[in-house]
Image (cartoon, helix red, strand yellow):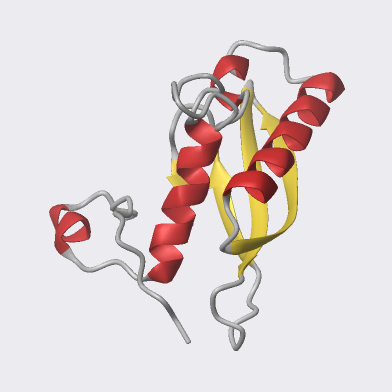
Length: 129
């Protein structure tokens, strides 16, 4: 059974209609995952461990150490702060001086729907389904 959360979701399509239409559990969860990733650790005063190092990595070289640091930090943050998903992995793809994170997860709210979701995130706040 699907539950509704009293929260907001990002307008994924970027249009006025996207702001006004109701959001389902999938949209809310995708927004929550994005907010965790794009929140800088220490940014929330009462919850200093919330967030990741991703916002601080914008000007870092896209080498193997960068990928390992980001993968590890995102994995830990999503497992700790988002209990509505089953985390299945993250891939960091570096192409033309831009790093893109591809996060794979399953919505754990609905036991009947076990479809693997992918969320693409880059530090420039561009994202796509």
